[in-house]
Length: 123
Image 1 (cartoon, rainbow, N blue to C red):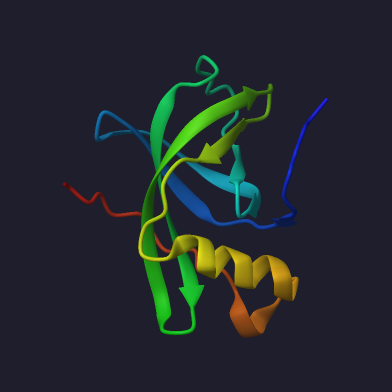
Image 2: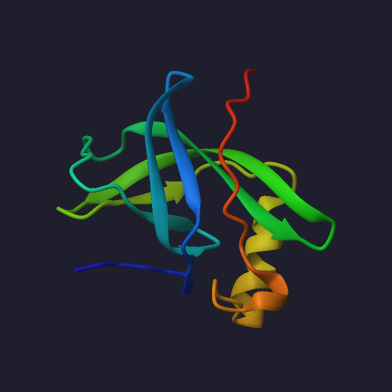
């Protein structure tokens, strides 16, 4: 049984998953919320509490903005992984909160989540 504290909205956008700053998978989101995201990653599976980085692009009021965030694997299924956000970059939670509160989904053409190819960002 899932225990979720916050609302998620259906969302389909490309993401790149990293481990130790190396890309390990490209997949799609299923849903997203202030606290986390579910990725349709197929057979990708890691141990619960594994720390990874997820990179995605959101359409913001200022235009497309790329985010790279620390995440923790909370659960995995045969179709994907549930990730909890551990850090906030460039006010990411503000943008997600706006999407959730406004009920915006990937079918809303006025504020569609962008499907931009991910580009590795080195720290």
